[in-house]
Image (cartoon, rainbow, N blue to C red):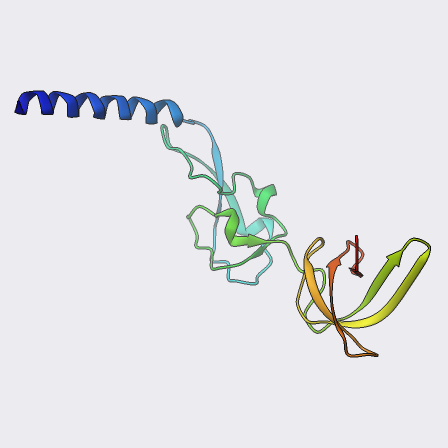
Length: 157
């Protein structure tokens, strides 16, 4: 009875390892990007603060880490990045195009009608982010999307 249970356990372990080996093949020669110095939260990441290293034979990088310097360069650290460690993509964000407290143009477009107003950003944002702004004249708080030129599109897009 005990021998049969041990036999089943060995078979299950063998099958499990075979499945894992097939799902995660060794990626020899693959590179990952790592920091070569401490990068603090809020700091833009220059290319000279990064380096690409070859993985050891049989080593597989974790999912959602930066594999190339081009994936990281110009982004901003959300948390402290330590030298020699993988850089999770969740630890990076795009640089803010609109800073909190900055004066921006809020634009509403409906067909041929275009209304622009001066507003103060209540939140920082990158292109495509939904942020809140306060109309300088009326004091009303509006929500809008940051456009690539730094204006805020309010209303339907």
